[in-house]
Amino acid sequence: MIRKVLKIYTYLLLAFIYAPLIFVIIQSFNVSKYPGDLKGFTLRWYSELLLDSEVLTAALNGASVALISSILSTILGGLAAYYFARRRSSPLVDNFFYAPIVIPEIVESVSLLMLYYYVGAELGFWTVLIGHTAYNVSYAYVALKPQFRLTATNVEDAAYTLGAKPFDVFVRVYFPLALPGIISSLLITFSMSFDDFIKTAFTTGPGFKTLPLVIWARAARGRATSELNALATILIAVSLLTSYIYTRQVFKGKED
Amino acid sequence: MRKNPVFLIAILPLLYVLTTFYVPIILMALESLKAGGIQVYTSVLTNKDFTSIILYSAAIAFITTLITLVLAFPAAYYLSFGVENPQTKNKFLVAFTVPMLINFLLRAYALMNILSLVNLTNTIQGMIIGMVYEFLPFMLLPIYSTLERIERRFLEAAETLGAKPWQAVLRITLPLATPGIASGVILVFLMAFTEFVVPGLLGGVYGYTVGYLIWDLFLKYRNWPVGSALAFIVTLTSIFAVYFYTRYGGGND
Image (cartoon, rainbow over the protein chains, first blue to last red):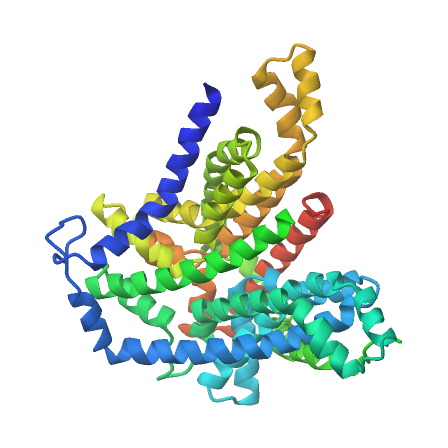
């Protein structure tokens, strides 16, 4: 009896979480502009979106920053994780990398803006990229270190004993074993950067906008619009896909 | 034989984080002291406008945390004790985790659509619903993971010894779940306290929280010393909370 009530309750909670997302998706195909007023199916808002140069530029801006930042931070975080995974666990080093994740983003962003101001950096693509990579290195470190620790050193020892060169050991033994971690690191850092709002808002200059900034500027002006609904639907679909891949990998790893 | 990598490879990432994260924070601390030393802090903490905004944000964060806890606990309890099939359990977990990874701004925007149907945009209630909506999984998952670790034998023993189900929940499950509850509470409170997107989109005039104040002090009023002092106070609060969390909360995860 109690179990049944709890079960219904849990489903209701999930409905609360998913209903707004589903509603936006329905609205994006709705002929009528007014929420809840279902008039018929249309792709008009999507075609308008494709003609909206501000949105397209912002998407391209965001994707290029996110792509470079994810690769850069996975390399940097990976190097640190590789090095420190082989030493005795040091809370000092771990905390050094945890801090950028833990500190509120707004604090991180205003302080970085000050640094840019002092060195006279021109705000735009590069300053946003450097800013995103600052916390992404930490996310990559957190994603990769456990993986690198798990990668059994005796497998490596075996490869060395059998006469492999250090380079071969890395490329043919270590790297393939660490690949799941590397993929999750790339996924996390990419979406962290692509979705970022606060740090981008502080470290960008005139003319360089990403999608979250565009959505913020338009939604804050007042109400939801059909075009924004279409954009939101595309972005929700993309993040659902990446996060589904990611969570499946995480929970699969836990089952083993 | 296997060699340990040279320290050289770790220098690059360490330097990167140092210059793009730690140096700015130190710079901010210095900036806050520039105008008149520690005075800025006392003036920020005695300024009625600032303290009322800080207290207001704390109150909003507190209410959000409380509602989130009350909503999340029963579901976490059901996932841990009510679902026996591990595959179903995993499906539920994925269902709760996936939305957490969708952009904050997007979720707030999605909710705005529905809230506008019932005329709750730009209200205090709408803002709190928005925060609860965003933070629910961050409360549910840590609670779930401590519930999972509770020895089921304790509950069997309680049953054998004649405890009623609610007695077992109140006197065994709840106390043993405290670390998870503490992690969830601290996590959600901190995020809600400095949250900026949800109040900005859903709160209207009620959305003027600490995050907004810092934003304005930097980008609108250009008052860097005071903005820095405020940001530094927020930072110290979160460092303290996280210290508390790792010390007494889910530190052994």
